[in-house]
Each structure stands twice: as C-alpha cells, then as structure tokens.
Length: 535
Image (cartoon, rainbow, N blue to C red; front, side, top):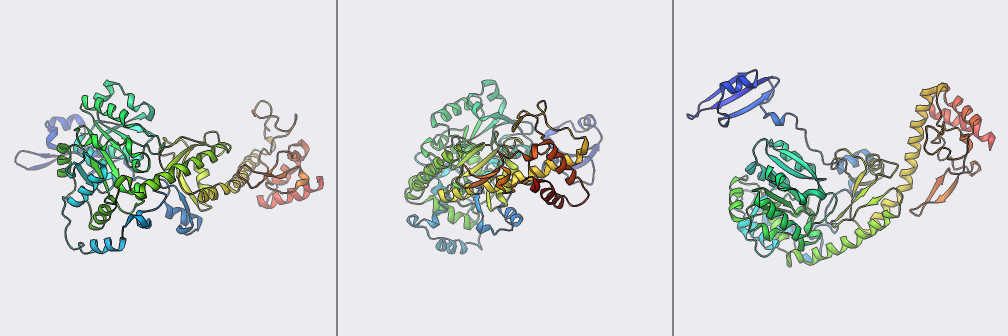
C-alpha cells in the first residue's frame, strides 16, 4: 500500500510525498495536523480519505418506483405502508389549514433569480415559534434535511477516531454519517441508552438518541431525557435528540425548550414526517445561542432554496402551531388507527406488533414461518409496500414496520395474506421437491430422529413430500378442504390429507417426478397417473 501525504508548511507551500509504510510517513511528516493524508492501493484511484474507501452508497429499503416497476403496477395504485409520514397527507389538503400552495409557489418563483438571504430570518422565526416558549430565532439552525444537520454537527464536533454512541435500532444514516467523517459509532441497545455509566459517557464525543425511536416507536418522557442530558453535559458530551416524529406522538415530551438553554443538548426537528412533505427537504436544529451561532457559521451558505423556504415557513406558521387543528386531528387519527392495527395483528399467528407511540408499528415476525424479506417481497408484488427492517437490526430478517393508515387500507393488506401464504406454500413445495429430486433414490426421509414434528399424521408415515407439490389441488376427495382463515376469507387446508405420506404412494409419485422432462409436466402426470386412481 502506498501512503501519499500532502504537506502544507507555514508558507502555504504544498509538497506531495510518497512512502510505503506508516513509519516512513511519520519520519518524513512529523506534524500530522499540517497534513491531508490519503491512503490508496492504486495511485490512479481518487484521493479519498482512507475511512471513505469502504463506504458504500446508502440504501433506504426498496423504493416505491422500484416496486412499481417490478410489480408492473402504477405507483398511484400501490398502498404504501413503508413511509413514516403523516397519514392525513400534507396540510395543503386540509381545508382548515388556510394554506394556499399556488400562492406560495408563485411567491417562491419570484425569488428564483436571486440568492436567498442565508440568514433565513422569517424561516427561523417561524421555526422558533413552532418549537414553543423559550426558543428564539437565534436558537435555530436550518438544514436541508436531517441528514445534513447530523453531518454538520459531527463535522463541527468530532475528529477522526472519536466515539459516537448510537442507539440500536436506529436509522442507518446515524452510522453512515459517523463513518463518512471518520468517527467510530458504538451501538448501544435502546433500553440501555439512558443508563450508560459515567465511564462510557466521558469516552463519547456525541450521543444520538431519537424520541420517539425509529423504527420501534418507543417514546421516552421529557423528565428522563432531561436527566440524561444533565449527565452528558457533566462529561462534556453532546447529546443530539432527534424529535422527527414528536409532533405526531406527544409534543409535551419534547426537550426543545431545554436545548435552547444548554450547550450540550441539540434537538433536531423535521417538517417531512409531521406535515407529510418528503419532497421538501427542511429540518432544523434547536440549541443554545453560542452553539447555534457556531453551527450557523459552519453550515453551507445557501442550504435552503426559495421554494423550500416559502413552504416550510408557511406550514410552521399555521395557526395553533403544534396544536393546530391539523396536527391535533392527525394525532387523534394515528392513536385510534394504530390501536386497531395492533389488535388486528395480535390475533394472527406469527405476528407480534410492539407497543408504539409513533405513526408506525414495528412487528416482530420471529415466530412466523416466513422471514421479513420474503414476506415484504410477496406483498410488494401485490401492490402493497411496507418497510422491511433488516437494515435497522444488523441483518435480522424478522422485523417489518407498518405505517398507520386507515382501517380500510389496512384491511386491504390483511386480505392479501391468504394469497401470500398460498404462494409461499407453492414455492416451498417446489424448493423441497428440487432437493428431493437431487437426492434421488438415496434420499433419507424425515423420521422421528430428524423432524421435531414427526409424526404429524401417523406413525410410519413417509415424509418425502413435507410440502405437497400439488398444492392447492382443491380436490376434497383427498381429505383437504376449504376452511375459514383467521382474516375472514377461505384457505385450502391439507391437514386431513395423508395420501402423499403413504410410503408406496410417495415412492410412485417420486418415480414419476424424477423422469426426464419438464418438472411442471411431471407434476401433472403424477397427479393423473398416481393420485387420481386412488381417489
């Protein structure tokens, strides 16, 4: 590996030096603070900082356009349970908001040919009033989305190698922002965050904490956050509280007013989720006057465009602010529909919806017979999209996040369950069949010693076809029948069919299926030649 060092001396003269070892580099360049260090294995590669070389582009689950293309369904026909937005839609659809989108766009258009006033006085004033008593415009740091604010904070506070504590689970952007700036993210379980010992706090430069948490929906009380913030400040550790969903949860638990008075507390807010405006990238930070002044000096000079500025100022200035009719109605709707979702899912096998105080519900599918990735894919092909959460849980594929929508929309999701289960059964049957055919005559059928469910039908049964290759045959002469499903429809049950587990029958079917030719054709042939005569 070649180390390239760009040395800048006090005369502002640059010298590019190359060395093959770190020791050689240190001998040549003894004053690291005067260097931009670049590491690469190939001198023709771009001159990136070494901690960026392994960074990959961020992916936030599957995108709606991708699902639309794969399922061949127009985006407008897809029920999207994946986004964590206000289910009532933007306030521009809410008659009582008094907002006129056309007038705002016309006003913004008049400013397209001039640079914005990067002080953003009106916007910061609207944000301070919305945040509540004790917050002044000079406490506000405007940002082009939460990601920009997080990056601004870390750019201004951490050095390479500094420790940043992040909750587990949390959005992947927390980790990525740390890694992109050379900081070291330390993951701590969410339920352990507020009990971190003094030694851990003093080692960390920054701590990220989301309230309510995404994706769990857990909400921590204002008093507990305040107590934790005091402990962090004692160790000169900056606590960043992400309140992106607080407006749709319980605004009384916000610590925004406390952040306005404390140097080691920074609160982030966003209009994206609260007002269902993902196309308007505006978030804002709330912190003490000294810290806000430094961050406003360090942020990009013109980070908010004219259209975003006009729309964000308008929605934050709605009459009633945090308790506008629009947001009060939103919280009521979310609370009622969320409870319905939790109760409905709790009654179905394999779903464990967790308690939530946000506009989404995290569902644990650990006991389900399908993993979250396959489950999500099956629904996406049917025009229903929700958030698969393996990226939140370090690859564990048993969590999905379902956003709150109306009962009617949710019942459309539930109504697709039987179709998804039928597809899963057919695919499982095909996979098991392929495995069986590959084993051939030497196969070892499941027995008392290899299957925890043996015997599921009768002693001495043949388990070659644990998943029936003829599912769903719909022939009640087999002993199978249509039964009422847990969701209200009908589903084909093979519970009382034992034909394929009779050793001689299983052997004859396997002989046909192993013949040369198309597998699907062989399945039809086996049904006609072996099963039908038995019926």
